[in-house]
Amino acid sequence: MLEKLEKEIEERVEMLENPAYDYGQTFNRQDVLGILVVAVICVLGLIWGNL
Image (tube, rainbow, N blue to C red; front, side, top):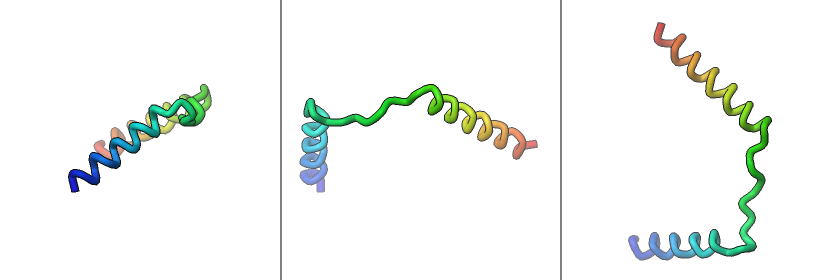
């Protein structure tokens, strides 16, 4: 089992180190705003639930 895990980790590291690897798009302003809105709603829900 450990050998399989080490092999998989090695393959994934090689894949990430490949210069042609596409990391995808970065977060833009709308993404960050959406994350913040959801986080605030979650925190308010936790506070409201504990009242």
